[in-house]
Image 1 (cartoon, rainbow, N blue to C red):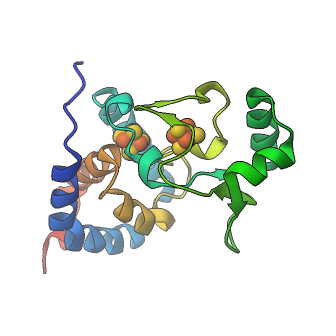
Image 2: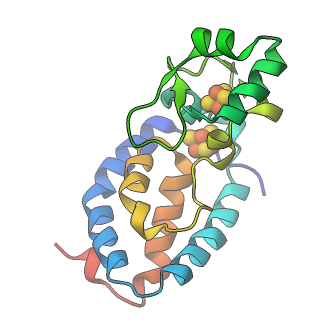
Length: 178
Ligand code: SF4
Ligand code: SF4
């Protein structure tokens, strides 16, 4: 499949247009009693959507977000850069806010390891980046609010949300009203 051209300005506009519908869709999902089935559907759709999007032509997450680092991530990336852990933390990281599972995140945006549209530490990038946009993680229904935010910045999440609505539309139309 040839990857789609990515227009981030357009994605943001379309996400704004769909925002209210997406919040209603969230309510609809919360009423579902089959969270595992929803996770399976999200994974299936994500695979299809991702095959048509080339992240190296986007890199928007690397420009807009501050990925978190675990202790293992710090050791691995510091080693790659030939720095000791504390030197690395002092240069690039800050403590995360209370409630985050990882103790640090990058201090600045865009990410200091982004070169052009590519990650300069790709093979050793933090787990948070490997998992992004977290569509394969379990518990999609409980994380829908953060997915709605991501529809504004991540073309994959935007498309997955649209495909999810299409896929479940035949079962229920409640989120289309209002
Ligand atoms: S994960 Fe989303 S925001 Fe990040 S590069 Fe891929 S499409 Fe863009
Ligand atoms: S570490 Fe790499 S993948 Fe992660 S945000 Fe920075 S540039 Fe992007």
